[in-house]
Length: 278
Image (cartoon, one colour):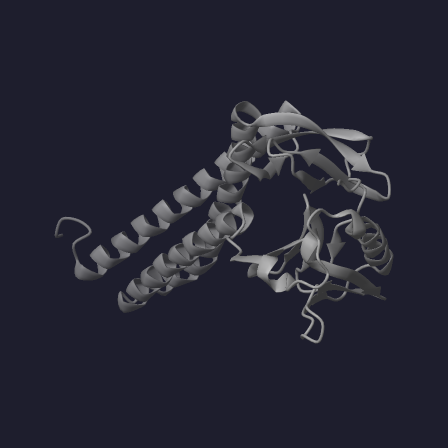
């Protein structure tokens, strides 16, 4: 049994989603994923902007359900109609069995983007911590001019480092996937402009969003993590991002180096160690 790739991905509120995943439905939340085999589903109900996945259960037993809200009413209705139409032909489906026994849940790992942003955030916190230490030392040294220079210059340098790190990380990811990943074409879903589908080596249908236009777009993904995908850009944009990232990173590092030097000189001057005695 197969379901056509045009079955929409239902995007709900609070970063929840519901989509087909082979012979099952994948319900994703920010902290957990539940894979519900089609054999465990009694039916899917679309009620306005909410979608409820009702599980099979023995007669008289409590019927459990998974629900997401805040979805597109049109996508919810189409998703429910398509999956419900396919349920009767699902192999091994028993509507009197306990569907909860077939549901698999697992915690959601942070996405590659989330991990990257977290590293940049902690790096920025470290840079601001260094700036705070320099401000304290300048204050103890009684140098108000250093304080006036340190705060704005330090904030600008921190921002430059964050922008540079983000640009270089994006450039490296695209460079690595286009050279060492798998490149294929993703086909546009006619009912969902901007949504393109591709199939990974395991046969799973995956999606990527872009407004590049066209009935198909070129994508490159990690062979060990097919969900890690990029849309390769022309060389001019890649090189531009690399130059921007390198410029910002070097500017931020040079700014902090200058501020550290200035702070050290201010401290040495306060101690009378900045030069030979008169």
